[in-house]
Amino acid sequence: SQELEQSPQSLIVQEGKNLTINCTSSKTLYGLYWYKQKYGEGLIFLMMLQKGGEEKSHEKITAKLDEKKQQSSLHITASQPSHAGIYLCGAIPAGGYSGGSNYKLTFGKGTLLTVNP
Amino acid sequence: DGGITQSPKYLFRKEGQNVTLSCEQNLNHDAMYWYRQDPGQGLRLIYYSQIVNDFQKGDIAEGYSVSREKKESFPLTVTSAQKNPTAFYLCASSTRGTYNSPLHFGNGTRLTVT
Image (cartoon, rainbow over all chains, first blue to last red; front, side, top):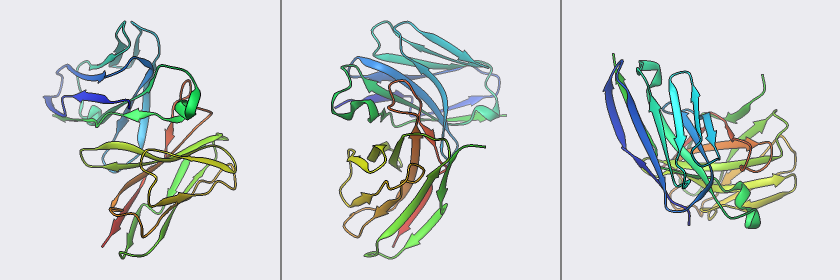
């Protein structure tokens, strides 16, 4: 089955510092989503990456998908306390639309980010 | 504003009782999902529904049941057969499958069974 490894599990940074969170798949991906979650709340969609080598940015957050489509990184520039939360990657394996795979998004275990003011 | 509403936010039940979690969406999405989140284990798919009157088991469906009688609603029943029901439950929806449409999530229901 599809597995996603996120690293690090947790991260504490000083406000203003840059940071990177990684998400690695055991299989080639059709696409990868990044979400953010505040504790005890739902997930907020950040970005979706589908093409090898693709890079997207939103405000101070940049996500990249490697050429092989097995690894993604999420980079935050000049972190702020508002960036604190849990970041999760979710992915769909490559291989077509059979067996309901189109609906079975697999998630990593998340990275807990703390930003100290 | 459109969105997904889960209720209640907190739910307490005694062991051996069935309990139903509500999920309503007004996004006109065809697909709906239930995930369970436990500390250190990420999100795991319980059930999903591609269309009204149809639903499929996810990875951890044992001890759970769902119905999809209306497009807007996808309630989840946690039965007494579920061995470890205490968890944070998240409902989500998408336009269609997840290949090209992101999931939109509700704010979750925290279920505690004692």
